[in-house]
Image (cartoon, rainbow, N blue to C red; front, side):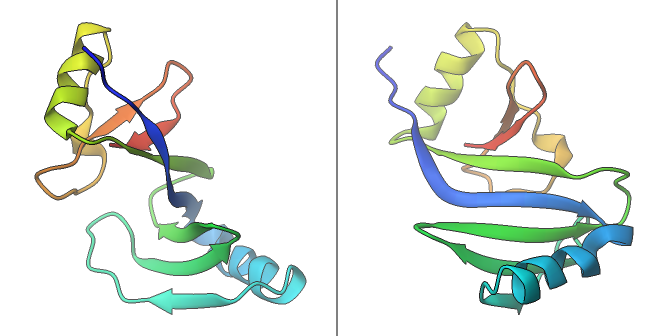
Length: 118
């Protein structure tokens, strides 16, 4: 199977509620990035801010039930279902239960637990 994976532009930082405000202040006031809060309707993310980070976008996601921060990355593929089949054939299962996604997308993790949006 000839599946090509490319890095997407989105990087999500899942930040515990107790550290969210200080993190937003760090990006906005210390690093002087443009930080813009965006509306969100998601059962696991209570607030989100968009930060332009060069050619990428960092999403500062406030998650009420986390105890530590996580970094989630985006993978782009020309055919999600073909890539999913390829990953399954290599022992990588989807874990779509971790956060709500559109039907044509999946969550996966690497062996270290890094989350990827496919």
